[in-house]
Length: 286
Image (cartoon, rainbow, N blue to C red; front, top):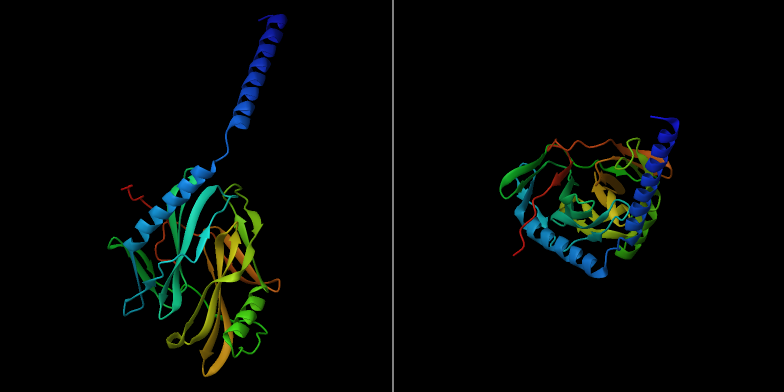
């Protein structure tokens, strides 16, 4: 090929590349945003999948295999625009009023990851879960570790006062997600505390005079659960806390900027750990 022919070929390639780039840019610019009607339909379809899914599960606790009670109303409806176009709901399973498990069910519409779920034990004993009577989860260990809240106040005498105390204590915690979804080196994401508890409870038979479940979120998606409980231990009353994950990536929590909790990346294959992630089959439309 002569020098002149080579220059012509090079210019032709450049021109073709510029045309292709211009076409891609114009196509991207012309791509319509998700309409309100489409978003509403996705929310409705996600809710339908969740309502069909949750009755398929049975969770039992302890050696006696006491069946947990599913609260039929979600304690949180959430989205996470930073991770994609998705809609989800968070549910709680209780025993004698105390939350023992949280389940997050959601569908990711874009990117099209499909229907999925997460289970996290909040129990001080072992749990077993079945889906359509088939074993799905056998958590052989406590899901949380309770610790005394540092420098906690004396437990308030009234419910409003205790709620005020719990909010003040929760505000001393912070949490970070080491997000590896789009970056293998893991991007640090500071999580936002929802100051309104997701769930308020008491369980005298479990030694809990009062308790609240808080969440640290991305968007409105709960990534870390914080439990605060006014507990009777050895005839003494004290505030205790526990932290639990709702994300498979590494998570870190601090109290007054001092690290108090860290969990590494979860493995999806193990069904004997306090946290599991699962892809779920979608119930057909009626």
